[in-house]
Structure formats: C-alpha cells, structure tokens
Image 1 (tube, rainbow, N blue to C red):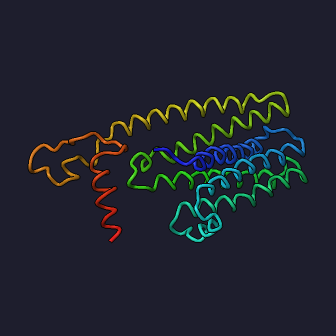
Image 2 (cartoon, rainbow, N blue to C red):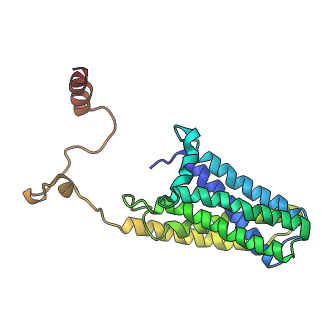
Image 3 (spheres, helix red, strand yellow):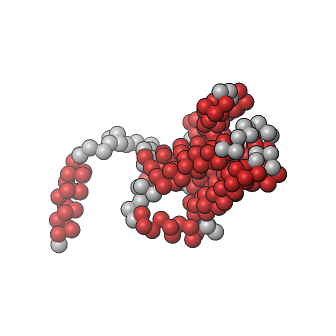
Length: 248
C-alpha cells in the first residue's frame, strides 16, 4: 500500500503538534516549564501550527476541496468527522491556555486547568485520527488492537522530541523532555515490532479455493503470478472485445 503524501503529512504533523500540546499541559501542571510569559504562547502557537498544517495537508488529495467542510456534519457515525470536530474544539482550550499563561503566568490555577484540558483534547484528537483507520474492518493490518495505542505512542514521542528542542533553544537544557522522548521512542519501537509480528502471524482469511468456490473439486492453484503489466487477457478482452462492446 502506498498512501497519499497528504495522509503521511497529516499523521506526522498532527502527531508533532498535538503531542507537543499534550506535553505542554502536563509539564505546566508539574511546574517543569520556564516561567517566561512568552514561552507558553510561543510553544502553543508552534503546536497548533504543526497540527493545523497537518489538517490542511489532509485535504490535498480531495477532488473537491471546497466540500471538505461537510465532513463535520457526520460526527455521530464517522471517525473522520469526529477528528475534525475534536481538532477545532481543541483550539479553544489551547488558545485559552496560551492567553492565561501570558496574562496570569504559568503557575496560575486557570492556566494549569486549561493546559490539562487542552492536553486531554489533543490526545483525544489523535485517538480519533487513529480510529479512522482502526475502524476499517476489511483491512486487518489496521483493524486491530495496536493501531490506536501506536498513534498515541508516536504522538507522545514526537511531541516530547519537539518540546525538548524548544526547551533546548529557550533554556539551554531539556533533560526531562529528552528523557521522555527516548523512553517513548523505545516504547513505540517495541510496540511497532509487536504489531509487525502480530500481522505477520495472521493467516489469510481467504484462499484461491475459497475465493473461487472450487475447494471441493481439489487443489486450486494460479496459472500465472499476479502482475500489472499488459498480458493476453487484458489485450484481447480489455482492449479489443470490451471496446467493441462499449462502442455499440
């Protein structure tokens, strides 16, 4: 499977953005961030910038981009719609968090409360993104218990990595954030390896015999290996006979 580049940008950029926002809320509550009135707002803007860029990139593969807004109306049944709603809703506590930080300081109760709400909603948005793929029953590689945890682990890793970079630039040290990035990188790697083992161990749901309905007649095997280049069947049936029928 070769996913569209816009989907890769969506998952990568939103992982960085919402991961960073989640860690900002948690670190603020723990009193582990700089007291500067500018650090919080700048970091939140960077987080929302990454997340927003990812969400905008997700529309690039759409044929009718002007209709993207309609996805918001299906939130009762669609994880894609829930992702959009959650992403927009997360902006409210995130911007409030930044404003409270600038006006009241990082240690204010309102700042801490808004930061924790923004962190929870950021992780909820990542979960909605994961469920877009995890709910697809025909694709066993996605429809399993690993998909959502892996999304959250990679978001936590990338967010911690970005926070470590910001703290390194701002204060010259980022020991805690860097340590968390290493821990979650290892955790995500272990979980990814377990995921690969899991999908490799899954037997096929169908065989040539069950797909053709010829199992009771004996062993069914393919006469030719799968391919996508031109062959006799395509040339005769697809390009000649089918076109003659279409021209009638």
